[in-house]
Picture 1 (spheres, rainbow over the protein chains, first blue to last red):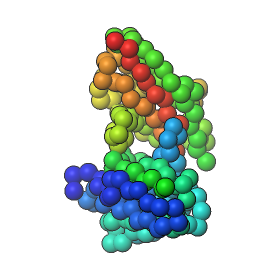
Picture 2: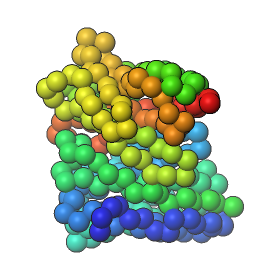
Picture 3: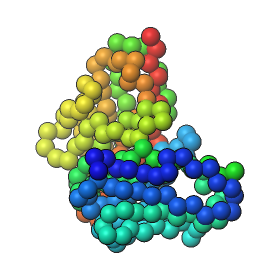
Picture 4: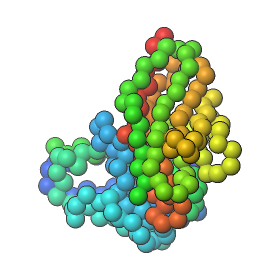
Length: 114
Length: 114
């Protein structure tokens, strides 16, 4: 597609439920990133994919968070047993190779855990 | 590992006044440097980037930034601010090779008074 597409754009879930957030990167972009942005905070790096591999998952805050990428394209970020502190905007981004090339962001998935 | 500091959390300027947003980075080698802007409820838009070469970089919307290696800085400037520039501005640093993720500062919120 023309830009990075994320779904859902908004999600309200109950504490303890699992959620899946989807990212469809720009066609041809091999690098994909997930970031989290909490209210009043900057962007917190979560995980980086190059193709289907995740060479850097150092930012995942706990083992409740996982992500996968299939076919070198779509990625899913899964949060299990959601907690209220998981409420944030989850931003996906992609680029042709890495930060040596421009990184383009989606508009984010707003997650609210009640 | 790289890091970014944006010393000013919030800046207020009058429309038509000049603007400078500060960014200091920490990285052992030559970094990739970026400025992104985020309007309320929007994704991040790239304003400009520095990879190498000329240390004064021109971007969109009349913004420019200057890379100063001796000061580890990459400050964003605009000679005359418009009301539509009100937004949050994020500086980011990327590393050559390795994870190639971007590390972001916590952002500077810009308010423009009429």
